Amino acid sequence: MTITSTPAYVSATKDRTWFITGASTGFGRVLAEEVLKAGGKVVATARNRDKVADLEARYPHTAKAFALDVIDAGQVDSAVTQAFAQFGRVDVLVNNAGYGLAGAIEEVSEAEYMPMFETNVFGLLRVTRAFLPHLRKQRSGHILNLSSIGGVVASPGMGYYNATKFAVEGISEALAAEVAPLGIRVTIIEPGPFRTDFLGRSGVVAKTRIADYDGTAGNMRKYFAENDGKQKGDPVRAVHAMMQVVESPNPPLRLLLGASALQRLRSKLANWEKEIAAWEQVTVSADFPEGE
Image 1 (cartoon, rainbow, N blue to C red):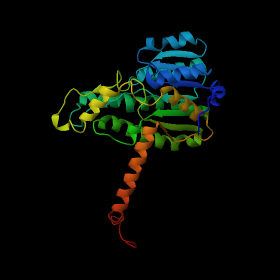
Image 2: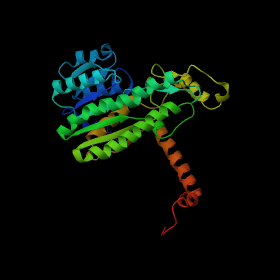
Image 3: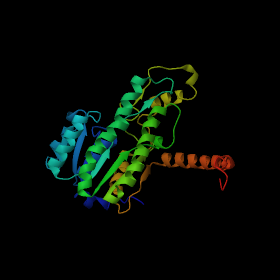
Image 4: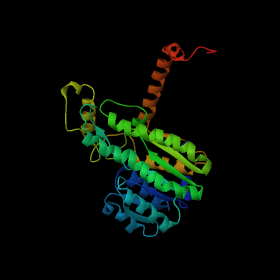
């Protein structure tokens, strides 16, 4: 499916209300702006409301800005309640809040990786669970969960981040099957490298460094330092693709974004197929023989 220069989804967007977490920067910010430009309604949330307040000031009738730290259950419940009170319904939930962490498995401390799990995984669960009763009542809605190509292909130096996004993939795949009969759709967004602040302000690097990992996980530290602002992915095109998915009558469960993500996944699948074939006899021999 191609994206045209005059997107067909724009007119339909006007009839939808979006709730976006982590809307102060990155994909969340760009998505909020593009939906509002298209005439849609947006509840833009961020830990610091001041960073999204300008959206409400510019679009007083179609935008609301709320403070929301997804690790705070009380704030989650309050923001969701206020969103439905303001607009009556929410059509699209975008679980965008999250960040990355570079470092080898041995290098990253629990104090460094646990806050990321709280945001990337448990925060997403808190927000989603708060929304589900409303979406079930509506018998409609679309949940976009921001994963990553790192949610399907792991890299040395990103193991903990990979783990959070692999979790998002599993949660989302199960959820999609559970809510499909209720008229609710789920799409997992899997971007490759995009020119957001993921490698800059939003990226965290482990404080501990072990020289033995310089040739593996250490390369990810270099990548963070040297590639911020050089990524090939265009955030505006990416969020237009997300908007197009929401308006599709047959949206995908997963949406890869960027040529790099596509190449990485195809490479993994090809290697996996070879490994499966090489070990197939060992695999099937683990069952009881026929008749036993």
